[in-house]
Image (cartoon, rainbow, N blue to C red; front, top):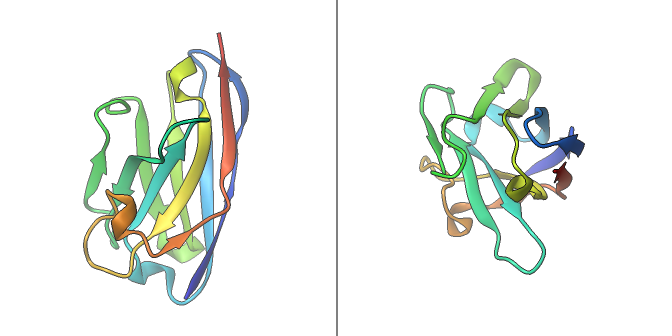
Length: 124
């Protein structure tokens, strides 16, 4: 069992940057592949980025490739999502996710634990 708490969301102008953090408590953080998802009003929750246990393998949605970077610090029990060149269409509630499997959490079906979410709003 792991508990996930996101932080770092907020309001930013288009072209700006934000860094989201996801701090885990409970069972060893380094045991879990981690991911970020987002959900805009009226839309389904969608995959954004994922990282394996060691941090050596990452995967991104096409819509964020080249703009977002996922990373983790296992010593600090924290995963990050650095978001640059933000667009208005990036506006959503962003959720941290963890998987019990060795597989990267690139679909909601692979996620075993969710954070409560943090709102990101990008203004034009």
